[in-house]
Image (cartoon, rainbow, N blue to C red; front, top):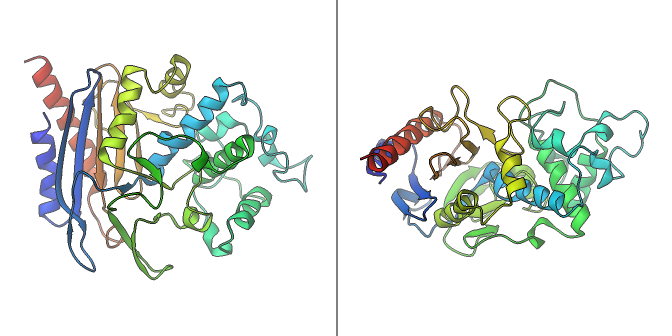
Length: 337
């Protein structure tokens, strides 16, 4: 069902633009198709990529883990999305209780990235003690700017979830094929990290997440292609999310952003052939997941485009929408055939 779509990704592998690629789809009736090509690792030695390899999902963690955890706590009556984060983190900017703008940020503000917080900050350069770095995030007076997609939003959400449950994010359940690192199986290599001095394999690529203990609201989740597809299947058939959760992740709140996810917009990663209400999210390491509810179709494209370095043009930003359009075209041809 995805031969033509996968041929596009396979061509990128053959041209050496990305080491390896896995493309998988799942439909509302449970039909599943997966294709794999290339290498899980190029250096220091070559390792063929298989269906069983675990990918560092990077920011796809935001939707598979953090968004789901937050919305479950909403359902349990433990979070009100329109209340400030201080309900869960009373010590947020605790030395400026009256004036700190951070204390007025709500859970929903962070979920839909409508805060003044920066996109990213090299938090790992301030130390490597996870508790101290969390304290740094909470007490820092963040520079203000226009609303942007921000890792800091989800780091704060992750801390809020930890405070509410009284444990780390890894205490909350994940489905099979999903795990906070290191994963319990063969892992796909990511970058030769200049800070850590080694090729990363089975440890989180994101420097801030690594320094903060490997489990944060914005990154740290690993998954196999089947683990990601299982999660997507639960969204399609309703077994993995309540009606209220599905409404939250499908309803735009800020531009093209829903609770945690994006919906289709001109030039987005999922292509333009999908239905208007399709949701999706990508990860820096070269991962992505898209769910077309109208068609009853979801697909994931998992690559290790940062291996052995992020400082090359892998073509991932062109690859994703072209593959998405091809997946939808093949699905429509078979469905309407």
